[in-house]
Image 1: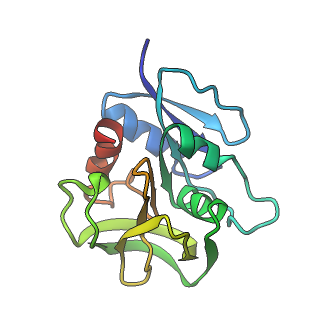
Image 2: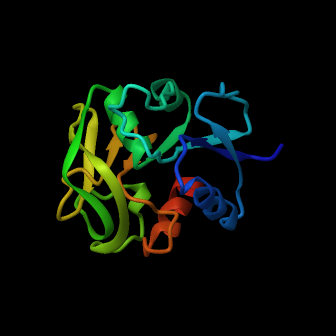
Length: 186
């Protein structure tokens, strides 16, 4: 039985890049649409929630039962995926003062397994118009940027991680290391 990572596709332009980065780490993965039922078989070891061109606050924004996923498996929410996890747990997502697009320095102030071996002030790639402005008490903010207070978080169960940036793109200098940390160590 081949172990695999599932990547939930919410329509992001980066979904294929996430899959490529996972496969370059020598791990099998499958991209599935956000509205397809997930089969929780023994070979599925984790789920990555991708980005989306939508805001989680839009009426027709793609939705998925991310709470159920995070109760069963390790989950990494990227950008929209991180916002969806936060919103579904009772957090608040608001339009950012200004759309953050491009390079930013990641200030890691609460270390965790996702950032193991990642340098503080590492460059990450942002691409979002919303930001997490209020998060549930079980969320522990682990990193910020100059413009984003909650650039990364971990839920206390240490099974669920959310990041507001894109680790799969070359502009995120240590992004492949972060993905490898999720795939192998988490």
